[in-house]
Amino acid sequence: QAQLLESGGGLMQAGGSLRLSCAASGSIRSIYTMAWYRQAPGKQRELVAGITSGGNTNYAESVKGRFTISRDNAKSNVYLQMNSLKPEDTAVYYCNVLNLWGQNYWGQGTQVTVSS
Image 1 (tube, one colour):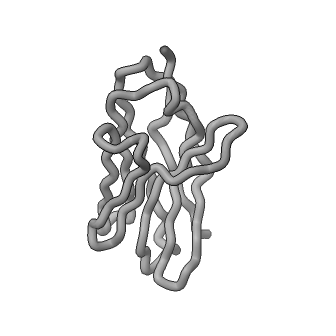
Image 2 (cartoon, rainbow, N blue to C red):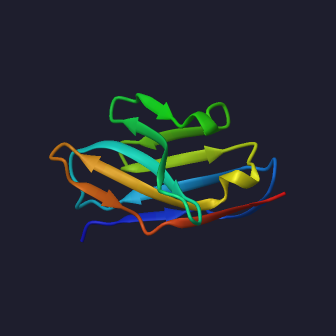
């Protein structure tokens, strides 16, 4: 069964750091992009950061310079290092994987709460 397992969310004070991890099961083949999205209460889900199999990255303007996405292709893992956290980063963070055939997979989400 194809699945994405996320970990690393939690409660942090503003200015602190958290690292999210996501592991894609072996049944997900030919992964192209891996990404993190987030959804805050009452808001639409938005792209936080993405990374291709070649290592090209893109970030939302609101997290540039603070968040870093990385991946381990051998393990089909993706990570999100979040530094200088702000209360407005509070959201449920979702891992997303897109493979070469256009199949899209989502994790169950992990809560990140930043207190002021």
